[in-house]
Image 1 (spheres, rainbow, N blue to C red):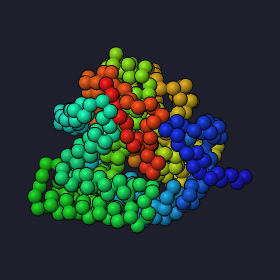
Image 2 (cartoon, rainbow, N blue to C red):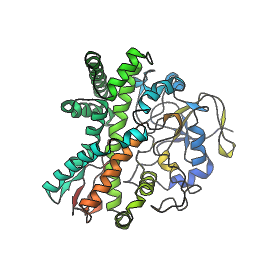
Image 3 (cartoon, helix red, strand yellow):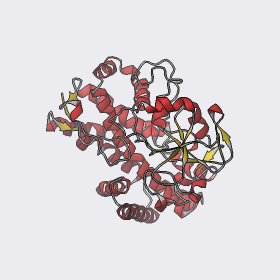
Image 4 (cartoon, one colour):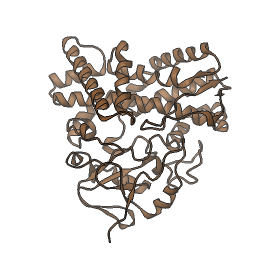
Length: 400
């Protein structure tokens, strides 16, 4: 029996809602879909199936270099074997572990005082501007850029120029040639920084990676560039937009904002629930994995070797079989299963602990300094960016 192929995405995201049609699809198991570009792939919407797809013994990324990649847009121009997102273990493990050590929980914890200083400085700016200050422009578009630039060793006076190139290359509305030019500018800038580190060693992650490349022979030059690109491109955009949607969620759920103020010891559980509940990416955006062999999913469905699977982890995070009353935001779930907002397995987000630290310190500081914080305009007047690959807010004026 041939599986029906469904045109996908079949829904456009509305703010932070998850389309109810996924509840109709999930009981069917994986389904075959066709995105605007590339070959058909399997859509994964359940927690059990996501765990199968994220197992690198079953699925990987390297195979995709030989295929027309399913996606919302043509991504043939970034099919570069040395980019971390296209590598599989053991090569992926070899390259990734050099950065993973720098982003370990213990090392990130040591950055607390420094990150807190940036948070305080940016909140000073918001307070000085007064009620109506735009949290997105004055805070969330700045904090992750400054933090990641400091960790990697990107000069402060060039960090926002670097950010602009990523903005251009990731904006759906831009033509392919403009996005390619911006990506090449990114790569050339990284190569320039690498050359500088070879002349003068500094105390930052990029210098550590250059040292490992030159003296430890741990990876090739192109792999070094690809790793630096992955850390920068994937490290600030997601945190930037998650900061906005997290504060927006709390402002539109005042009982939960009050809960956090009254139960600060529950912050970690609240953060995990916020990451689970907030659908960060738009439908069809998460990258696909290719089967290394025939793999059986739930309901006896088989993905054949060489076929692709797309895990909609924002939908997976609303699986009622794993999270009872999954559409409800609940800071007091009892031993909830780990969410999949950082994906899972070999390609889980290497910078997740740094992202968590920034959002945790932001919420703690907002509670301390602005306990009566609320939106300065009606929630329905908060506009979301139509062209971004994540659910991102254009502007969010606050008052206190």
